[in-house]
Image 1 (cartoon, one colour):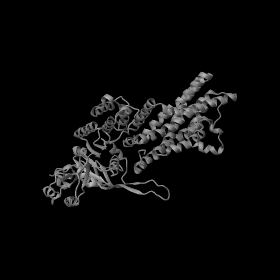
Image 2: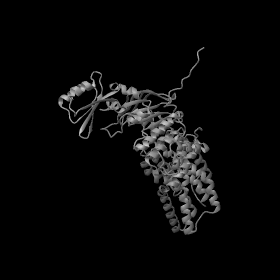
Image 3: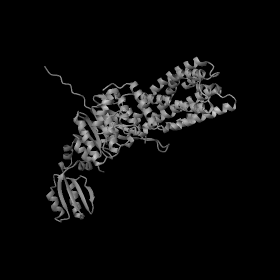
Image 4: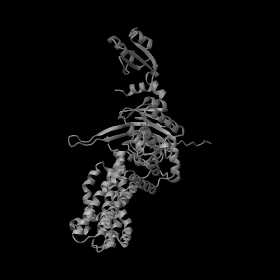
Length: 264
Length: 328
């Protein structure tokens, strides 16, 4: 038999999550409704204000949809593992659970692109709005940073789902607040000053701001600009990944100590 | 010159194992407390044997299996698998152990058997061509090759249970832990499952099986431990356990009713053993271990010669043993 590898676990988990999505795509619909609705309403508001900006809205839909998937998909997957009792065979394997969750989180974040595609398609068909090739290239270039920063945050959050059966409750409470403080709907530069420190502790805040700098013409975001955003996103993502890795080790020990792996 | 011999460590060895659970606190009036699930459990499983674990619900069987699978930490005591400590060498143990939990859960229903096995196999380091080869092999062993590409949610309970076993043996473990693998299966599927366990064991896999079915334990296991209230109350071969109760002989009395005098005779004859009562239609069957002091013929005489009362001597079964040792 081969040796269990972390990369192998990430890839297997990514593939498994993708297969599950294809086999049962309905659960993702709920997570796409809010981003799509918010984006289309935002576009109408911008039209009324006389400043229609397709790029801004498409980026918003992309980020919110990816965030929704990172939040719901990752936590839900662990919750589902508890319910299906698949958490036991996974924790009973020689690779750490963090690697399994990493694969899922990556898939969920990437699958969030669907939200942006839907909004893009609607705007393109109804308003004739889209992205220029330069904007599209910039989006593709920043995309990996956005994915990793969201995945790192999703990973840290999903540790909570292994730690406690009540994580869904806490997630529901914090979901909208997270959307706001990380700037999914509008730039965090518009937030009250006292809220900014909370906002800046999340890696996606920095990555999203960088994305807007790169894609949205005339964008005014955080004062340190694109390069500062990229640097901040990279540092915070590294911190989150390290913290998630450490936390997963702890929660694994916690659940085998308490013996409450399977949902009642 | 003395030849050096190195003995392979036992697949399972526990010493004074205890496990306690903390109950959920319900406010100040009902603070949490510790409930023992396993209490001073000491036993060893020998290489290549099928070891049975019997006990009523809540006896601690599943807790013990989970500790051996490194999914639950012991509260105190020592637990070693292949000489490796479950607390500190869990990852190394997990590659050598296959866990099969009974029931319909534990699989991704929306995925096919192959997709399930590919995922769980990858977590054990089985990838690429090796993955395909092993998946084909184990699906063939458990008789699911034909249904390999069907979604697991379409499987019958028996098929799911066989898929559980396929997953458990996918990485060729040296020790297989089976927690009630035949629970809820129809007799035919249960028989197939036992045959499968026997075949895997013949292939060299040491096996621990927990079950509520006495005949299953009797049929499969080289040695059996009986757990009650978290303690091992008996551990021996099937023959040894039978001997433990009435020297392997059980007296069975079948009648419509018993007079007070007859009941007194029975109580004397059974000594300190429990009299197990079973109602069969209008008649009652009472059984207890044969005591050396009372012969069957003497008991027949003392109960009277009425044709209503039948007294027979028969070989003690595992069910007799279990009921004598465990029944309240």
